[in-house]
Image 1 (tube, rainbow, N blue to C red):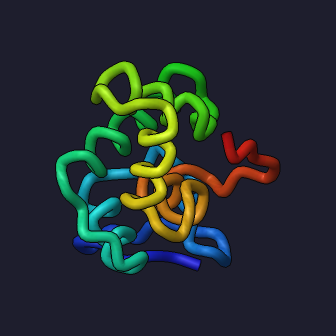
Image 2: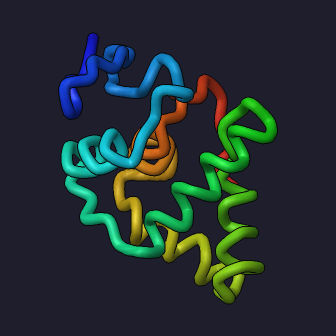
Image 3: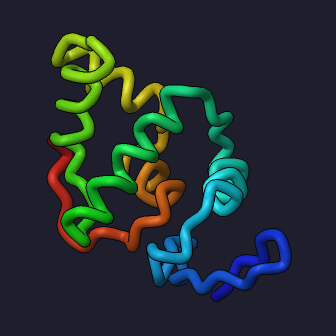
Length: 113
């Protein structure tokens, strides 16, 4: 399958996850967020960029536990509050929405944190 974003054709799997995370752009994230009915605010973008930076450094999608830790350490949330807030921002789940919007491949096995 393919997405057409600003004249650029981007290959996706059957669920809409990017095949090549390196092709990700903010415009693609905005398109995917709209498809997922996620209205992006500043905290969404902070999480997405944290995920992208982690991917760039480690070449694997970041586990939800590390994103929760990021919310605790960088944005000042308590542990329970951080996980709850993450799922408020991405109500259909971290893998379903955050990973997709951040341009990650769909993880096969995933910890829910």
